[in-house]
Image 1 (cartoon, rainbow, N blue to C red):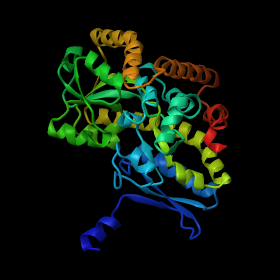
Image 2 (cartoon, rainbow, N blue to C red):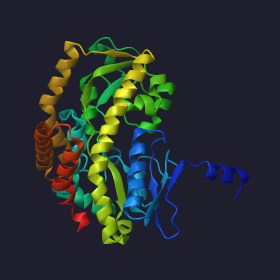
Image 3 (cartoon, rainbow, N blue to C red):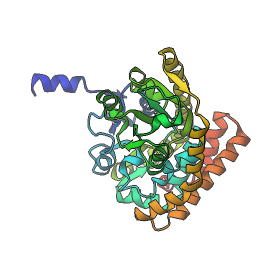
Image 4 (tube, one colour):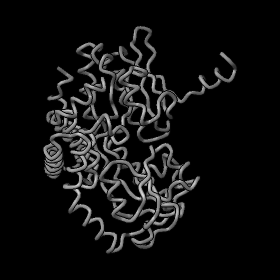
Length: 369
């Protein structure tokens, strides 16, 4: 090994959790930066898994795309380059046609806890087409947290709806892309880790994403304005996606330990992102970033988009090869409604939410059988 190669290895952004000589060590890929809220959620899950299995399952987490970038993670997990990884459905639309209905319905859910719960309910339990996609990709999909709501962050001030006309906007997902077009913007597809560089190089003028990205990707060093109205919440993240053979090699108690920890990770991971989003908002304001309250024209365009989007999404999914597009959309909209009602009854009690998610989703998950 060369000196430079050795140095690169020693400085690789990875976290080694656990040290039992008898433990099975999992390799997990995270394209995100080590300081991010997402990395905190993932590190906690695997630390809890080590404790829950008495050290039998330990995990090495490779952060910052050391092994696989965001779009390549699904295939890398399926090919067992790594044992697990964080998969973003919108970056794998070809392989995850059904699953992408969840993030595509981003404009129709504004509560992060609802988005998280409905997303795992659809992907893990209700959507048969999703399960077929996971099987074809050779992965086991356990779901993940809901991020804080998406906002539009721009490198130049926004003072009226027409300021967005012609601006190049980073966005992912079919529905969010159509929303940007409705607002006059030009959609640009990029993974989140490339946003800051694209801002600096002039490839994009704005980016759609959670406010926490202002902090985690240092976008508050390049952005000057935020549209102070949430576009919706990205649901359906595959935070904990495992190679199918790796998962099959776990003992029944080890699989049970994973399913036991998932509801807590989904709910408390979402709550962490909400707190982090609030902290990022305060930090951005302190740096002089303006938060523009949308004018009537902006609100009108968003309303018009929502009126026609279900029909557009149904047609789009059918073109992508989803035979039962309308049924999949209805399923996820019903799950959004279901979890909105549950949260209205339960309130913001994380313990009760965790137990409800355990009962409604993970107790029914076929992967635990």
